[in-house]
Length: 138
Image (cartoon, rainbow, N blue to C red):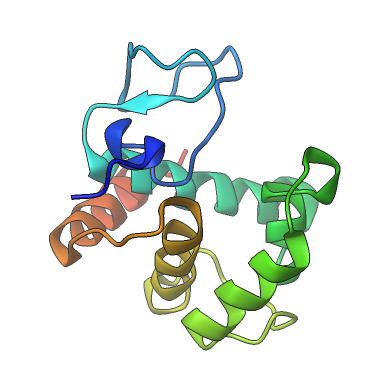
């Protein structure tokens, strides 16, 4: 198993602490990044955040989502991130996305986790994460 921060924290999207407490979040030793109870809760947080990006900010493509998720102003190679997610997921970077469609979003989230952690997580974790996302969409 990878020793990447996102894996250790059950936060494979490397979501930063922001003062709010999310469903499934637990206290952890990391001062900068959230820690989740299970990997499924961490993946669910990615789905939740991407859904909010679409609903609140109009980020309805991989390109728009990743520009918000990993902006170049934070030292990210945003263009490479966008290209990698698009290529790995098979979804064109400017295709409009339905964030409540699992067959669309799971390949994108899998690709983001690969970029963020350098590894993958099990299919069972994705299944549980999607169930949590649908159950707690609000």
